[in-house]
Length: 347
Image (tube, rainbow, N blue to C red; front, side, top):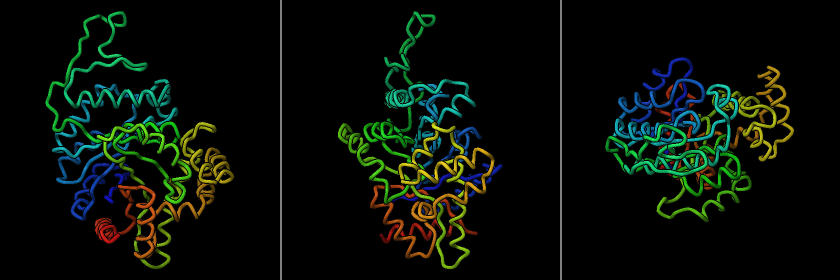
């Protein structure tokens, strides 16, 4: 199992990116760079490529609405070049509030759009002329929709590799099935190892049944706060995850349109999910955080003595996780990553 982290920053992404150098030396395998409606991911990924040497650098995620497939292709190929073959293209549909609110685009056909984007990007990375006829994209643009001067073009610059790993953020059944069928990796969020099979097992199997063997096994990332040690001060680190869980379950979408709230319900927390959302949307964020189930926090994060953390690592691995994604919570994040790497090696 590989070890990854998500770049966490509060106001100063450059400073946070600088810290990845020490994490790389400690054994970090992959760093994810989020975007949402903050700073763009590719800029920080390019900065990380110049600062690091071995760690893989993934977008976690670029949405499939605000950039054309050609632009996503250029980004993937460019990042792979400046990182000398270390780029990972994380894609996702995001949600209606971001796509329609921040980008001013209709949130329509997210699954079909994702499928077409992946097909076009892979075609382009092979440096084939871009030709595609789909419901969301037609390349070149038909004459009746433009000037009639469009022609199939291949990427002007030769890519570092003929493909980059493409991971998809997915939670819903149909999206997970599509991801298992066509993607290199899957990015679930707020992952609960012991309940993953019940929630996603059937969807994954449906996708695996149609998967091209040449893609290899589906890679999967999941994890949470990482704090290794004894005593109440270490255990208290688990509460660092509460605001994140409350934000996603309560505030990442309107009522009836919150994928993470739906996920909480599928885990068996229907009552808590409804109460957290009501409190969060009414501005009572602390009260919402207090209602995040302790059981979920314990299972989805890695906080406690080394022996316990190792048990949680084994549970993640047994559930299908290939890349344990952690947020080190300590005064010395690099030392925590090094200790986690050692524990993973002893599984």
